[in-house]
Length: 113
Image (cartoon, rainbow, N blue to C red; front, top):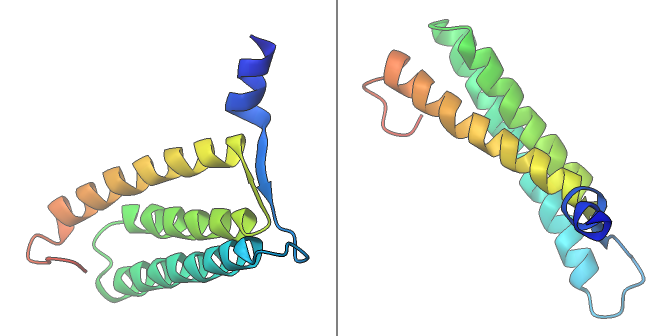
């Protein structure tokens, strides 16, 4: 049982190693940095939309969720662990729910943004 708890909650699955000979570590590292920056751009776009229209303060939460997801990718660029995967899953669920609510309630005419 203790082993299961360790796997589910605290195991470190991957750590960045710049000296790794096959290149996977470097590729995964830089991919996560790029992905984190993309999520931060999404966060900025949501913030700009809020500042332009000011339809709902829930967009500030939406912006923060994108920023948090981007930050989690930046953490993942150096280490992937069970707790981080759970945190990202919770954040993703909150993002999907918040997006659905914001778009349904305040931007009915919008298709993507």
